[in-house]
Image (cartoon, rainbow, N blue to C red; front, side, top):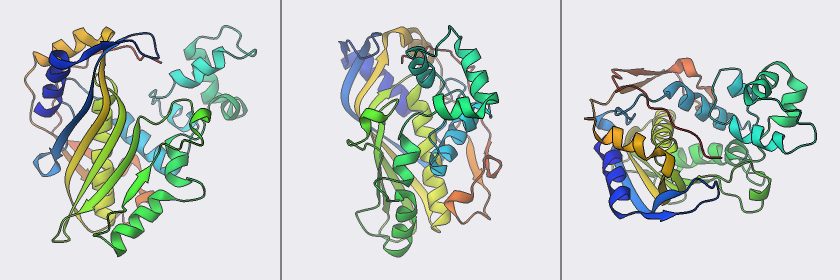
Length: 290
């Protein structure tokens, strides 16, 4: 994925060194766009191995409307573990538990999970219940009934509820676009904040999968994913990892296959999604800044 490596180089060459909310520090730029033609392959990063099962499970979790990490924890998907743990550490109930101990209790104790495992009204809540509006259902209906509308949008950034969220939505809104011949579907994401090493590869794959799923249930062909950023940054403790990837040559993109029998966006399960031909370089670890 040359587009991703080009963005890495652009930030290293043109970015500004800045302090940030987490205290880690970043090199950042404001305003950038990448385009991925899904007809050329599924844009899953190949310069490091990406945990795509976690990406796909997270997207299905968003679509379900759930905001509690327990369904992810039960599937050993750790994407959101840090945020509820950090919140728990600030409570009087905290008794020095490690994060692993906290997550194990989320897994095994449903009452505990209900109280301490919820992230607030994050993505799933906003996608499925933004002030009473099921945005995903409306999106599908809109594409089917009025494909050339300019209103095929879903907004996750709800100013009225941001204060109650564990993390305000980084991928803030997305819009779909049907080609003039009525055959192809594209999606553009606006991401207000992008962690280039850890988060952005997940975001590319997640929204590309969403595009493919929406296209299938609307009888269209997935075409282009456009990824537009506000503040896109490299954390200072990820510089070595970024440089390591820049020394690697991208490999052929894999292919995504969906169960063609699925016609309802909410019927997809992980078993209905498969990746073939994925041959990445080895994984590279990095710390999450919370």
